[in-house]
Amino acid sequence: MAIHAHFTLSHPNFSLDVKFQAPAVGVTALFGVSGSGKTTLLRCIAGLERATGSLSINDEIWQNERVFLPTHQRPLGYVFQEASLFPHLSVRANLEYGYKRIKPAERKVPLEQVVSWLGLEHLIARGDPAQLSGGERQRVAIGRALLTSPRILLMDEPLSALDSASKQEILPYLERLHRELAIPVLYVSHAMEEVTRLADHLVLLQQGKVIASGALHETLARLDLPLAAFDDAGSVIEARVAQHDEPYHLTRLDFSGGSLWVGKVNQALGMPVRARVLARDVSLATHAPQGSSITNILTARITELRDEGVDKVMVKLRVGDSHTLLSRITRRSRDHLQLLAGMEVFAQVKSVALM
Amino acid sequence: MMLNIAPADLQSVWLTLKLASVVTLLLLLIATPLAWWLAHSRRWYKGIIASLVALPLVLPPTVLGFYLLLLMGPHGVVGELTHALNLGRLPFTFAGLVIGSVLFSMPFAVQPIQNAFESIGKRPLEVAATLRASLLDQFFSVALPLARPGFLTAMILAFAHTVGEFGVVLMLGGNIDGETRVLSVAIYSHVEAMEYDAAHVLAGGMVLFSFVVLLGLYLLGGKEGKR
Image (cartoon, rainbow over all chains, first blue to last red; front, side, top):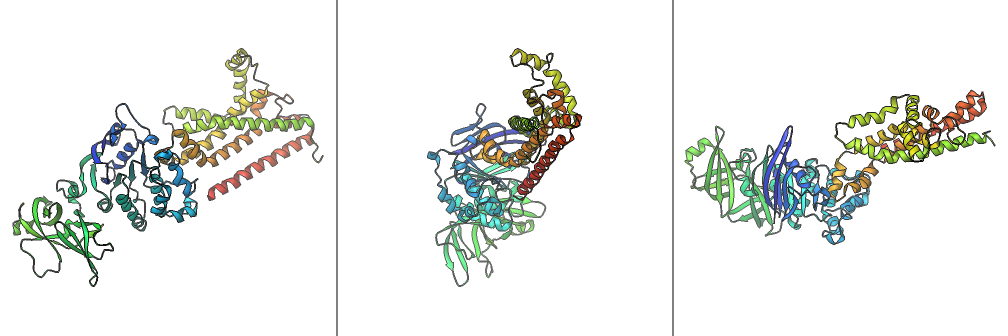
């Protein structure tokens, strides 16, 4: 079960030459700066752009030297940057547009389920798509795409045209989609926050080429990629809610590398949560710190060090059996503490962002 | 009768409406695919086709009528063809008028539809394609309804323009009662014969008709604009 894609495309100011495979489960983020070709790649996968190459989804060939399935014959859902609802149709008719066009036997996603799931009842009642806000329109567009029971969902920066309030309104729905639907998602974005929050797998694009592809937490923590040089470089830790400290309004998250205390999380015990720890928020000590205000101190082993610019060093650490932390320290600190790969250190985590 | 209108003039009115209706219908059938192609094609000869379509906008009607007369006459290519097919000659017939009017009113039908298609852009069609709509389905379920204002404008303009046409008709159809004597020609004949009263009835009717058409367009535009 996998997505295999290989495309080459040459325009006067832009060329695409990508080859990647991604698991056909969960959310795969196509990440890169604007102009890196991620939207073009998504359009090639949808058949909206004609590139030479090949594409198969779960061993089903959509394109090769002899075959080119036109877009309307590809069982995909596509969510564009702008909701692009049909202005001449009601909200309900928009939702039903694709639904009506697939065979009844192929309708695996029931209309009522999508409606209740995305909270569309009162939007349908309003009738005209022009009456909806940007975020509401995008929710309808997502529902409309899901109702074609797609075998893969392609999302082209679905949040980028929205203000941050609308973004926060939509993100929970996308997370639910992630958790509850078995439809693989290709998610184009240039926003690290969205990617770390939603994706399981990361395909990194730069100037029309794939420069890395792999599991999210591994790829984020690779020091040889430009990601590590980002100011908000960091790692992602999958943990579970373990304890609530009501008086102090805190929650303890457990993972194999230890535990992290964070601000109160409104989740039941045992629920999985994703925590993002930025490299600039992790400091290192060679001895267990005493009398520190920082409560989150993890034992870690240095796996890699890489100089960054003239004054900084990025340190990659292993915590527990499979978790990674990044720490950005000064070159002087490294020399002072004589940090080397293989050493055991204490990582002090100043702040944890919950996704 | 309030208006003193002669039976022959009434026949002219009827003939004009018939001509305009047939021409409008034919133009919708011809202009729609042509406008679609002009809106979406990237071929190098698109400009040439667009210019040819727009030619009647700048050409004196008599010039178009003159060439059509030559073309459809006994020595013209089209004339020989229709003769060989046992269809007779086209000039001085209703069919000839239809052909001349279709060509002459073409830009008035093509351009509003083309503009409507262009303003829709590719996105709604791409969305429809990702929702399993075939090309034909995209055209009928998305492009056509979204281009509706353009079609209404095209229909009204083509109809009104055909009603008001004079030069091509005179060159091509002459002045045959019940066959080619349309309103504008009838008015001309009345004036030539100094029958000003009869000319007044028809001319006044034309003024009223044209005003109603333009008012309708304006109201329609306002309604569509508010959507």
